[in-house]
Length: 229
Image (cartoon, rainbow, N blue to C red; front, side):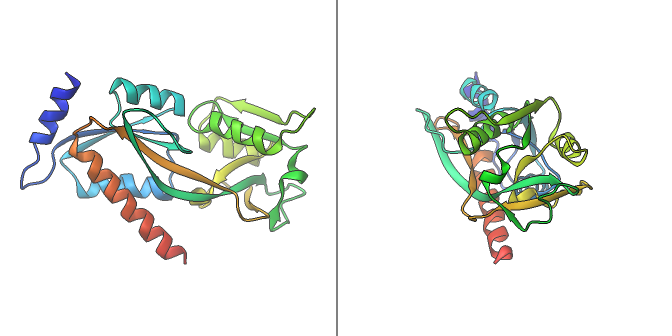
């Protein structure tokens, strides 16, 4: 049935443009960044394609992808899954988000060693579980367990908790335009910390909107790189 639906979507491409729908799995939506721009421009340029977005953890989105409930998923890190294509779309620098009143907020850059005693906040959905693993890798040591609190809130809610002094969190460079008051964004000192966002989709998926979305997103990434030079 899934293959028949996808074949019907592919056959509906006419001189008036692609029709149908595309189901996209994402870790978190934001009012800023490359993903926001790509989704907005796709909606504007391909008005006959219905975009359905599912926000969830990497595990949830991969599960939905393998069941055929998603056409494409955007995930953090490299994914190697038999029967699926994957492509790196963009890299972004890792930033620490601190309360504006924090003792380290006056610093232009921070390093991991001076952050080991801090409490870090992650959300229970979206990129939260992946960020928890990332923090454990960066802050963990033999005989030491970093303090990581998981909250069942949105990314915006997490930012507000940081502003209220509950702890620190991580974000990518594409979202540092967040308008939350009371927080500051600081880069890791060595400048080499990056996280990658990758697209993954089934090799048997014939939905033409997948290619459209990939091409448009890559064009947005190219523009973003050119503007940041």
